[in-house]
Each structure stands twice: as C-alpha cells, then as structure tokens.
Length: 252
Image 1 (tube, one colour):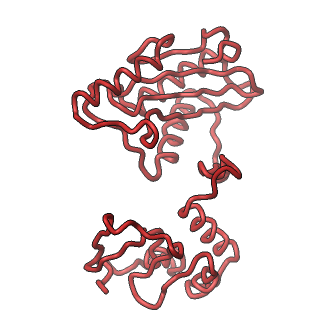
Image 2 (cartoon, helix red, strand yellow):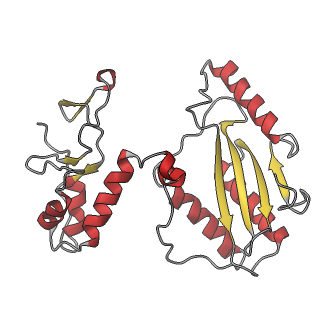
Image 3 (tube, one colour):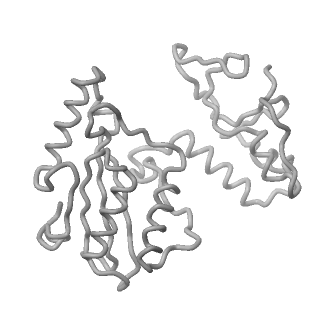
C-alpha cells in the first residue's frame, strides 16, 4: 500500500495476515487451497483477489474512523473466512477505503464466488454501517459504474452482456408505451430478438457456445447464452398489481 496515501502505513489494517506481507501470505493460502482440494487455480483466468472501494463525504469523517468502519465492513462481508487488508487513503478531497480480500478461504476449503447483485449487497452493508455511525449515504445512487471492458477503453471491446444491457437501456429510455413497443425498439441489427415464440430471448448474433458446452434448457438444446427473458421483461409493462402466470415457460 502506498505510504504517501496512508500516512506512512498507519492507516492500513489486515485480518488473517500481516499487512507487511499480505500479498505473499495470500498467495501461500491459495497454494495450500490447491494442495488441500486438488483444484488448480488458473492465475491468468481465475479471480484471485477481490476489491471493495468505500468513499465518504468530504469533511464528514476522520481517517481513523474511516479505517475502523472499513475494517468492520470487510469483516461483515467476508464473515471472517477470508484474509483481507484495508487501506484508508487520504490523498483526495474525500477519504476512501480500499478493501482487498483473498478469493480463497483461510480454511483452504472454499473459493469465493461473486454473484449477480453483489454490488448492491455490499452497498447496503456499507450504508448500514454508515447509518449506524451517523454518517450520510447516497440516497439514489446513479448507475455510473463501468464494466471491465469499458474501463479498459479501446484495449478491449464491451462484452456481449454489456452490449445487451446498453440496448435494453436505450430501448427503455425511449419510454415505450407497451411491451410490443419495447420489442420494436429492440429490433435492431446488433440485438435481434425472437419474440414470435416463447420463451423468447435477446442474444447477440453469432455468439454461440462451443459444442462441448451445449446445455438443455426447458426440453430443447441451445448453444446461445440466455441474456434476457422476454417473459420476465414484460413485467415492466404489466398493470399495477398484475403478475405473470406461475410455472415454467413451455418447451419448444
């Protein structure tokens, strides 16, 4: 951690490892995980470390309190199962924490798997801590985050799911009157939809899984990665109080 940003390392804490040798100890933990489970980590493809960034309003908190709250957030999020390090940076106009935790548990028996909605889950945990400490939170956060492809800029194009998300956002921004209008807005060359039969899904043209990865879904074989269910999307346009019929979509 950069001493110039952490008051000479004073604003750095750790769990399950020494802050001075955290990187080496986390790598050792991963090696012990491989030996204990027989599962080999791919250091080029697997996620080996995760990071949480936590910011505070300017002038609202002291560096020491920010460090304490960051440590508590890390402990609550990892439940004490994963090594982590917390660095409080004071080089900007606002104090912020960088929390880095190992993807492998201290018990060497499990690997952390990220999940959809984890961003919102960790935000709720951070907000709860801030409210417990009489600090302000962002009431209506704007979706300003970037995908990894966007963060890389021209070095890497947006992922397939990122393109689909952009298409859906653009279609919804046109404020379609009903679901049929939404489907019409989605009918563009980059994002073809097949709404003629159920279950219909939006997918990228030509993006298919390898034959070895073919899976059966609802009684049919498909090699397309499901990205957006039309039946679920139609919930956006249902009258208030009305729900979709229960049950699985029919096979085709």
